[in-house]
Image (cartoon, rainbow, N blue to C red):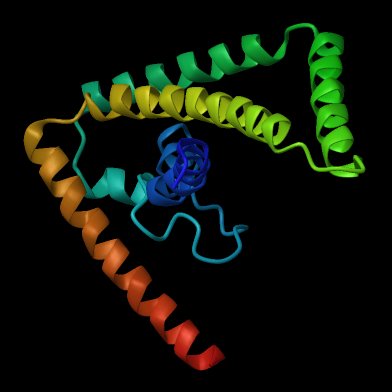
Length: 169
């Protein structure tokens, strides 16, 4: 398998493997308006936090981290919107030119795919860094307990998914 294909595959699989832990870790929660199994399969939500018996100091640290991340994202997105729109338009035009061309340019497609994978990789690394920062608040015992809780959730999720798959066949 070519390196580009491996990178594209890794970029697609990584978010699936991580589940929705980051959404819950950064202040999300199950408000009952989610569809499907999101957040039920190994995430880090309010229910998990209650099970971990976090100290007040840990809760405060996590709150500060969430608020700092929120402020960082807000500042990042408050930048020049016209520049962002121009970049998005240029990318869209590259994609359109590639797929609408008379002959498929595999080299250009590989280059474009590599750029997309690189951007996705940067985003995933930043997300993992933030998750690590939040998890570093936990004690080793809490980390062990978190792993156990997530494994239980994953097993229940797999069981439910198996039932849905068997029913659909």
